[in-house]
Length: 113
Length: 110
Image (cartoon, rainbow over all chains, first blue to last red):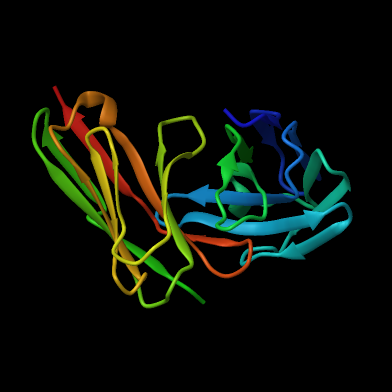
């Protein structure tokens, strides 16, 4: 299994509070991704990173920010949590190659009340 | 925007039956991946198909990539309860990003 750790695994927070989710990898992969998974929508890309301090937006980036100060860590911040951000969040990693394959963490279940 | 569709959305079968699930798009992909996800876990990569017309076998699972590299199928022979899960296909373009289908939720009853 790819060495990807997400923390926390579960979190309940109140509307309007900031929340930070952490993804840590031990594989030295260049690319890291944050997805959210919701019933009926599948996996949707929030933000991704292609190197230290290099990030870009995905299809559902509003209300989220990311940071990558080290190769191994990719942080996702909900600046002011809303109930619509209740979801399961997955981090993934990949490396450039002939073809791209993603390896996922175990997910963080976030509930905004 | 590249969109992937998967069918059926849900499938419930008895142990020992065969099944096929489909992944379709109007876009061409450089490669396509299949993942299986179990409750409370992240998706786990099963296979990557790259060449149009390619067929790959993984024990009782057979994966096929369409000739035009726009669609794929997953066939399971003699399904077992351990095959239960959410099957996701993902298409990779010519960069490092993926687009995921919504998944097929398979339930194999003993």
